[in-house]
Amino acid sequence: MSVQSTRGRRVKAKKQNNLLYLYIAVGVIAVAAITALAVFLTRSQSDIKAPTAPVGRTEEGFYYKGNPDAPVKVIAFEDFQCPGCAYFTRNLEPILERDYINTGRIQFIYHELPLTNIHPNALAAAEAARCAGDQGKFWEMHGQLFANQSVWATLNSPLNTFSGYAGLIGINRADFDACMQAGTHREAILAAAKTASELGVQATPSFSVNGQIVDSGRLFTAVDAALRAAGR
Image 1 (cartoon, one colour):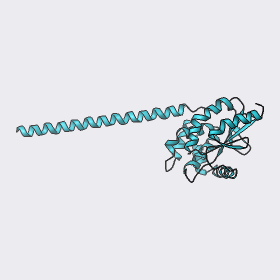
Image 2: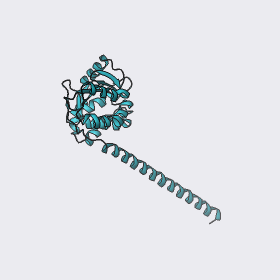
Image 3: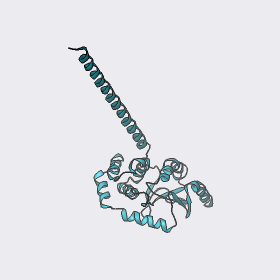
Image 4: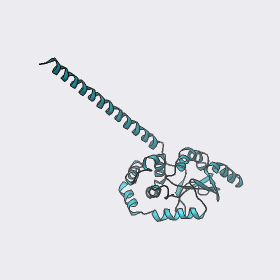
């Protein structure tokens, strides 16, 4: 056996070992990335809590949380695919809930305004929230949709993802899927969008505070002014 052929086999074996180490390293990194993503999503889900204030639906069919007899009514015109709405829900709504909704001073009403011309999945998301609402979990689905907006917003079809959220919040997935497939709430949501447009609401998020339309930057000031006007 020649020295050259022996060296050739050694070089080949070394290359194979290097490739093996590379594949192992790539595999470890992939597992770590998947684990980190799972932890991130789990944290997002664990942060979503059911409202502690009274919840229900208005005579017009919109979901609310807070005292229905509160002196100030805040109507939120929002689009589930709107990044600004997600920011409001994650960062400002908890403050509103703590200081105004849970204290009985305002009733907070969610009014759908899906901007379908720029947000193709907004209508389906609004339907998902109402289909969850049929099983008493509107606000829980509302939280899932905004917490995970970046996950489903760019999907060609988010229905399977929404069905997964239905399972996470503990509702019957078969009933939820049937509601989505049938488009049970589609016409009501489109009518809600038309009503918002007729009221002059052109952007999301926007808010009506006892009839005064404001953006999120002026919301708390408008709420405080309305409470003072009501003697509260």
